[in-house]
Length: 179
Image 1: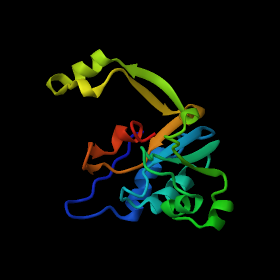
Image 2 (image 1 turned 45 degrees about the horizontal axis):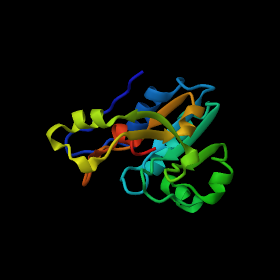
Image 3 (image 1 turned 120 degrees about the vertical axis):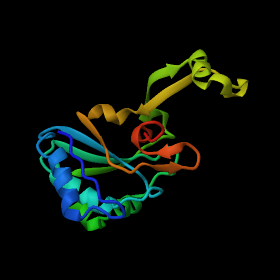
């Protein structure tokens, strides 16, 4: 079921509305399923600690619940940085949230990736149109973190913002180049 809440112009959604919207959208749909929630790293702003706790509670009846940071090609986060990102202490991670995995995308590990497609040079030329330049090279492999195939469902939990290089961040970019 789709759930949506929109704040009035110039205002923010209150916590209760956010929780209710998440509950409506998530509760009961992932019972006994393996779920991977893809989240941004510290370069994107959102109330991730609040959202992490809310989603962890709402999805507490999953078979497996993990969160993976869509690093793109940013450096991996340490265990302490992962805890800080989602707003939990080391003790909470070892107790209350011990069944939840906090994972980095391993973009720099060939073993962590799997090829799902290849865009041919001809396809790239067609996409680029008049912007094509011979320096863009040949075929482009399309790889993704192989761990996503260990889950029944993926959820993207993050904002969409203007991006200084790629036009915008968010949405499908959590998959490519995110993971």
